[in-house]
Image 1 (cartoon, rainbow, N blue to C red):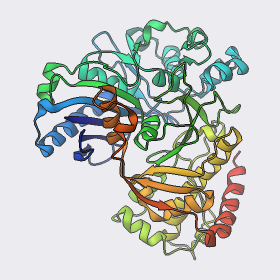
Image 2: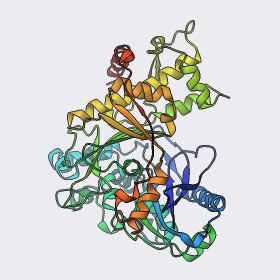
Image 3: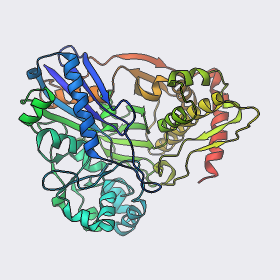
Length: 493
């Protein structure tokens, strides 16, 4: 039997086919080959067309099925990972009525702040575990307030993964984990938050029905199965936001375990069995994929919008013609501290860890007679690693101690410089695994469909590639560089 894992990112969408028995990836592909466009009509805005995700995903699925050359009738289950916090609004025909307002869009900050004040800080934090902030519920309120004609057309609102599942099955549904990431979930009452709905003047009818994260969430439509080259008996049996799914992909399910990723944005995600929160909402608490009313499993999420996108910007605009590997090689020729250059990578919208401030990306202390492009490449990777460490220090304040961090061997973790800098400055050991979001989603689908009897069985084939320990010989110099970086950051706060 085969499991299809889908990963809906903001740069590209990916599909992977997993052999359920051997736990081997048979084929994988992503589209588009260049990064998907993010539209910003105003500063701080970020939108994408959901139909663009779907069009690229269909190409990826078809490519994978052709490359694997297996019996399509043996594809039994589909899992979906998706970019978190996005807002997709559809009409009664399940067609989008506007572009999706995605995760790094910061237009709803003020609306969220007003709701935080009207509901009350203590009630928000004790019931929602977060401020409404700039999350999905606040983005919907922005549409209601600023685009009333569009709002009137909305039949249901969805997260990006819900939309993809709807395209596959024709069913509209979501999960508790998904509702919690949108700040629609009341953890004390174990229900959709009436406080948030009332604050924004929303009806609960606008939300899809709730299904279990691991469950039969709908069968693939016959015409869709034919177009994609998969079985019409296949079911969608798992969905989760990219960060809970990344943790699942790394088998991070128990309290005290920590996962991290560094794609366009950067995340450190720790699991807790305590209903805990940061009083300043610099890090956020959401329902993890295995959370239930009887068994608390909260994901404590540190998200930094401006991480890998900083490296990507340099690749496209400064290192023209160089590959990322070539950039890494040049950066490693420069000593720790980048010879005085400091880069703050926060150029991708308001940063929660900075209390929703939008300070922009900054290249500081550049000497035009002394520094080269290689200095900038190193300073960027150091700045990204330092931003992780800054956030990890915040996580420690609410009881999450990242001593061992698991990550997939992908994105920024392909860079020896980045992973060694992060390990050394944080003092944490990093374990790299041969997995990614699409493979994690495939394994989650196998459990959701009952093909695996347990999550332990689903992840029995997960392979560790390497372990990176802190370099004690460089730690003192690295911490000095971090202190310089932190002083520059504080000037903006």
